[in-house]
Image 1 (spheres, rainbow, N blue to C red):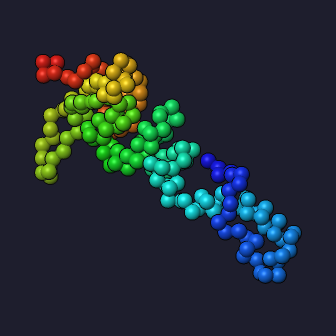
Image 2: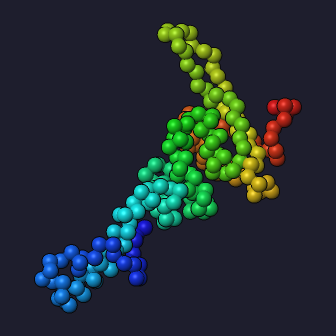
Length: 191
C-alpha cells in the first residue's frame, strides 16, 4: 500500500522555485531540491487525490483491503476487483441489517451470488406488554434455502461451508440454522 516514486512524475510544487532569489541561480541548491521533488512528488499527488483514495469505487486496488478494514468488512483477494469494491461500498448498509433476515439474504447475494430464502425466526420473541406471559418455546432453527443467482454460477455448486461462515457472521450467536441448496427458485409444492 505504498506510493513509491514514479519515474518522471513532475512535482506540482517544485521546491527550487520557492527558494529565495539568492538560490535561484545556485546549481547545487537547484539539484538538491530537484532530488527532494522526486521524492515528494508522489506524496503531493496522493494528497491532491485523497478523495479518490477514500472512494472504494475508484481507489487503487491495493487500497481496497485498507478501506475494507475501515468499515469492518472482510476483503477476499480471491474475489474479482469489482465485487471487492461493491462489498466495501455496501458494508455499512450490511452492518445496519446484521442479525436480520434481510441482512443474511443480502450478504449471501453479495458474497456468493446466490438467491436465498430464510424461514423461521431463530427463536426470537418479544412483547410490547410489560409483565406479559412468556410465549411458547419457539423453534430455534432457521432454514436457509439457496439457489444459484449469477449467470456464471448456474453450473457451479454452492459452497455450503462458505454459506455457514456467512450465516454465523450475520446471525445472532444463539441462532441455529440448516442449509438447503436448490437447483432453482423454490416452488409452492416444495415448501
